[in-house]
Image (cartoon, rainbow, N blue to C red; front, side):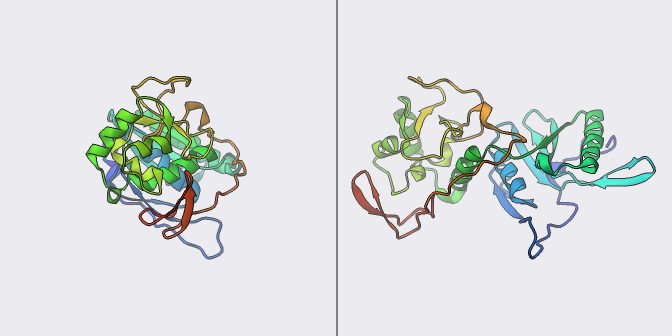
Length: 277
């Protein structure tokens, strides 16, 4: 660790592959991160959710999965552990992240986390063990994340108009309607170019046309100002739910391309946006 503290681990390839086991309880894959402009691997949906959170975090500028093997001795036993993520921070610092639900942390796992935390501290890195995030926040961020991809477009004039409209807090649907560019999917009118410019309560309920949205700098009539959050529409700082239990949520019906939907008293056909909740 002493000789490698200045290595750009955010740019390294994973030290081991990702496995897809038939009948297994884990689902591995690759997530496209706007922060890196490429795909970052994950070994479970819990790790994927953490990737989404990291990708929205304003202080994160680099992410790599399974960045290195850490070797140490526990009594006479040789041990090794590959952390889930290496994160480069905007101030040049580094954070090593391990993702594991609290209920899945046994004695050996706790020993591994303690060993790597000591090593990180010795070279000035942060270490974080993170668990299950708030389910409502995650449902909203998963939905928003797909619109951050470059293929969704970034119309500058629409973005500027939205900033002007949401100076006065109002519902997402009503504000999108005022742009005159609204499609059947209101969130498509709130492009990724507004990342950080708009805020909403992501922890109270699933996003909808009635979700109150406001600018980060504008007046917030009847609403309490929030602290720093994650990205486009920022959650309350007290809804992260680290280490909490996943609450049961009913899954809303989905709407796909070509489906007819009734909205604001009119029947419309979803023709341009991907399936949405």
